[in-house]
Length: 268
Image (cartoon, rainbow, N blue to C red; front, side, top):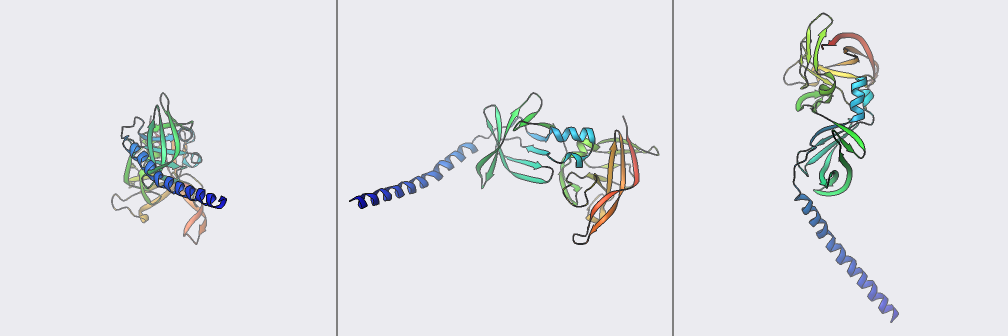
């Protein structure tokens, strides 16, 4: 009798577990559908960069120095659209969605159109936002797909907006303009410029910028790399000296600033 009762209990337990597992997907699906119905506008949409990164760029004018610990978040203008997070200007993630929870926003990780994990909580302040307690500053960079960055097409022109844009004078009195859309006017035959944001690779020992002479059908061979330094309102562009060539990757593994090529002073 005891054995029979034990078998009955085990059988009922298995049936209960099976029934429970069958019910679970329906509950998860219902939750997902309810969340999907919360399609509303987002008041904090736009491009946000960590305040620490923003302040470092303004003070030291060095993307390389500011990179560690930086974060960029692109928030869409509607709920449940893709939110992009870029850590250290190196690791790019675009599988997040944003939801409003009372007076806060939340960034959720999604997999296969299902919300799976809370990633960040966003609080609104008087002028900025806080992401998990860290202050972020809103910026307005141009986003386009025809400017070269690291030999690839870049969409978010960060340094063009917060560091380079402006009118300069060369050492011999010529006018040069760096536009926030990546256009370069008045510097010899160059038409475009693209500052480097990501320095987690070989040959990135100094701050660098790419200048391009051709206007259309830009290829790798059209890119000219320079080192740069800001000293207050003076921008200096240098040739790059290769100190160690990597025969495996066919790239220069270690570089240093070489001869000064251009000295530009920002006009006030």
